[in-house]
Amino acid sequence: MSLQISEEAMLIVMSVYGGLVLVLCYDAIRILRRIFYVGLLRMIIEDIIFWTVAAIFMFNIYLKYNYGRPRFFSIILTVGTMFAFEWLIGRKVIDILALKIKVITGKIFKPLKKIVKLIKLKTGRKNKLKKGMKNGSSKQKKCDQTIKQRSKKTYTQ
Image (cartoon, rainbow, N blue to C red; front, side, top):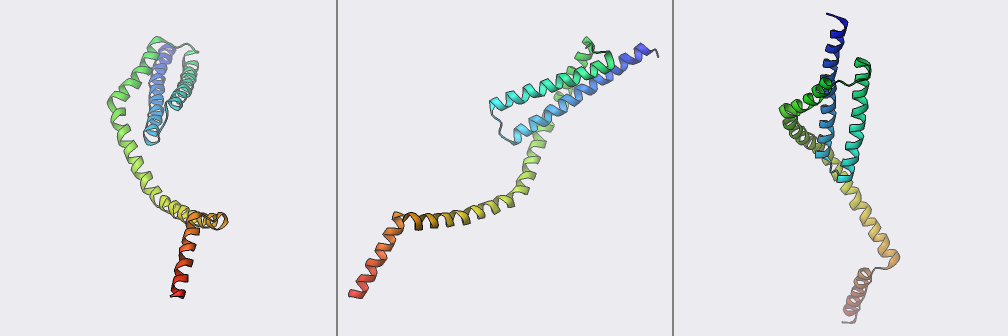
């Protein structure tokens, strides 16, 4: 095999590899978007950052294997690999993985949520009691007045 043909073959292989890497990274981002809420502005910023990094990544592949010249067939192979992977595997896998990760994180964080609620309840009660003592809340004053009135009635009767 001549040197030029082996370079072209290596460019083909690396174009397919680049397409797989890009689609897997973007699928990871999509899974995280399904697990955690992402607003429109954040999604746009994430996409801009991703595609900028993707362009630099693919340029490095072209620089190393084709002297920085992107060839038409290598771009089509990269994009075609991304579409084929997404069409055959990506759609099905993303939903399943996102659901499983949500279930796993739910099981992990469920005891932690209970502990946090207990801590909030305990600290919340103390804060309310301290506020009531310092500020003399109206409910506390009314309660104290009714107790005094009842005690006076029992002593006077």
